[in-house]
Image (cartoon, rainbow over all chains, first blue to last red; front, side, top):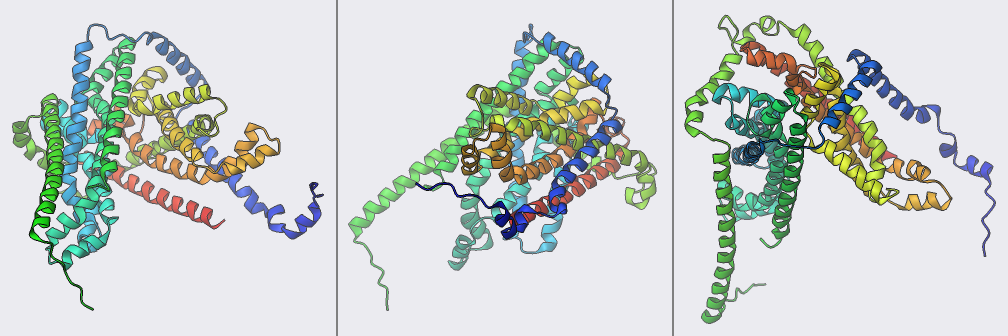
Length: 282
Length: 294
């Protein structure tokens, strides 16, 4: 049996001064940062017209609204809502696919290992960045000006904003690809196009497919909101019902969105697994 | 040394060739099948989304000329020939942009605080009780799945027009998103320190504070910064529904066809997003760099 040794704190203290007596600057840095961060929040709360009175009034209002949402009830408009939900899913699938199709060639231009010239790559990257900097809702407003109100504007809005995101993600996937296979194609006399087709694409396509599926998932969410500015889908119904304060219908629509998103999550999760799982075989 | 390439006898080769062709054919068939299903889904979606290609082609010129129009001043000059005239409202826009950034900052930090409070209950390895974990997870899922702007729409009615609704909407959405990410970090944390702390008789709270927290703070900060970036973008459209920020100005400019204003406001938004992206990227790099050294 060994007994726990007497701990000689003084000796430990003498041996490891760095652990026991950290300088005040090191001890205070973290709390100081946290205090500073929350000080800005307090300033922000004041600047943005927060007041306890408003907060409590709003919360009690919110409580009433939540009570009025129960039970969720579509009234007689269930068929319309189902159609709108279908529209939303269509917008997500179509918009994402369009974006992926257009983004693939552009992403090649933005990849370091395909286009070594920085001069050519730089403008492409900045263009993609700018497109990503603009929210989907803004694109929806622009497209409504062009093709009019309706889901088609939504498809184009999602296609454009995802184009920016895909361009970046795809080019990163391409840059991460193994160069040895490309060199192999070159060694056997393949042209630049052959290098891309047989050296790069087989490596990156599964990654890209996974990303596209993931975006279809997240775009189902985006597609639910672009209706708020008039670009079709279930968001249009939702915004309308909120404006006329039909809370039971609102809660029903929110439930529909939750269920649809969960279903898409499930399906695309399975599909993604199938694609990634098949990868070593292909 | 020479390497002899052996050529198989004709018969053996034929068998191998046939097997290879069969394998390839099966794979091609499967690919083709997947492709057909996908194409059918697309077609269905096209019908559902009322895709109208003639409209697109007829009006595609509009899309291109829209950019031409937003880059033209009222007097027919290109915007960059008279920057003062183009950015005439910079004073107001900068104030609105400041408000936008502030909305996202306050929203992110409030959201991060709530997520921080909840994530230990949501993580599989630290949750004190399964029912609590289930409850917190569903709550976070709800906050994450309902889009921020839908919360904003409802909050505008409950709290009145103004940035308060935007802040709360962003805070709730961030709570959901960050809560999930935070709890994933906690799930990946090393549990040995927890055992060590617990063996000294410490409470659950002390276990979290002294065993888990030191492992996860860098990850938390990194995700919160990333969320801040995303929230700046989101806050820029909160004004569409009256929840404060630059979106209000933008939607007015777009709807009333103040073309050069649209491009000016878009430019300021894009520049702001760039600046935020770059500075948070730099901050994240520093944070992780320091963390790696200690």
